[in-house]
Length: 271
Image 1: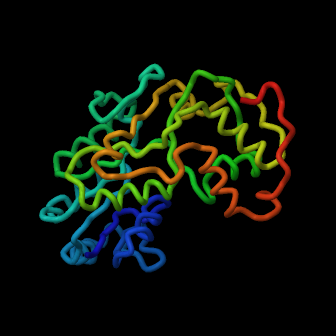
Image 2: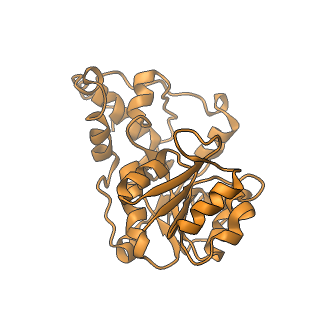
């Protein structure tokens, strides 16, 4: 078996490691032994030798992988890392793979549908975190904030659980699969937990008007992502089914100064 990855980024690198297979991958510039995405000859030679192809490349005006290399994908296992953003706002309700596609980014919606039409396993991912990219890192760097939106909830997933879900999908039928944890919750709860673990006060609540348009659009959406199909069909279970367990795992990878700080005393306003 050989896996070809379009876009060797954060999540795709974890998948590559978890697969245990020989890997070929692209990046924009061909760094660190990868293939430059626009090197047609090298990419097509790699695809010809691959049994499995995974794309983590986000769409532009269209899906760049399908637009450039779609004719070279037939006969292979196909996987695509999409987003649970395709569901749009659900008013806090649970959504599964049968929910209508009405996300705020038309290009992402179209790419998700296009990969499904190609017979891919489309892994819809919520907020991704893990070592080096987590609320703990943002709190430690002083870049985290709270919103005061206790009723705005969303799902998230540890990068290791993305990797195990995609690997489980190597033997699964084509279709969409939500890979998410079991405990959707507000951003403020997660940030407060991270601050407590680091022994620092929770960051300030900011006005939504002070955030970027993209951030304001994110906080305007409210949904809980159901993962039952992935559990049932893939036989997958998240190693970190809630953010507390996931943050503990991330904490163990951080420097001793950050990871071993005494937690802050409990306060009545902490959830």
